[in-house]
Each structure stands twice: as structure tokens, then as C-alpha cells.
Length: 76
Image (tube, rainbow, N blue to C red; front, side, top):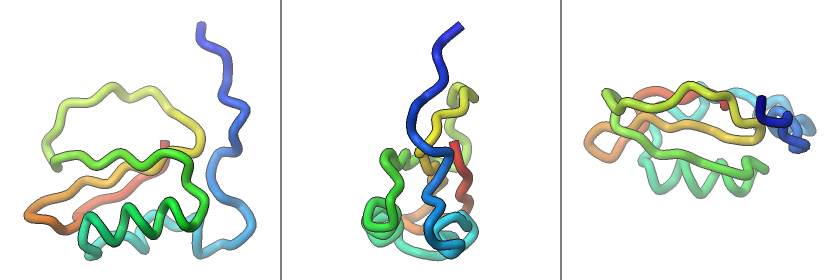
């Protein structure tokens, strides 16, 4: 079994930073820049129907992007 990540689950100092729904509707570029600026260590940009592994990675924000716009966003 892989060791747990030492990074925090998500940015904790501001509740606004911890709400993935705030990225929906933004352009992928803006969302990615904003996520990094708000403390997310890893931002993964995916197609809405992408096949991905479901392991949880602390500090990662996932952005499902269609036609350049974030349509879904989730932690891990």
C-alpha cells in the first residue's frame, strides 16, 4: 500500500479556496492559474469523459474541461 501524502487535503486557510464548484464555468487556463495561486499543488485538466485512475491525491484539483470551459471540478 502506498504511503499517505504529507500534503494537506486541500488549501485550508480560506473556505473559498476549498470549494471546487467555484471553478465551474471558468476557462481552463483561468481555472488552472487560479487553482495554483490559491494553493493547489497539482491541477489535472481532463476531458469530461476521460478514463482516469481514481486514487486520491492530497492537494490535487481535477478539472473536467469541454470546449475550453470547466464543466466539473473535484478534489483529489
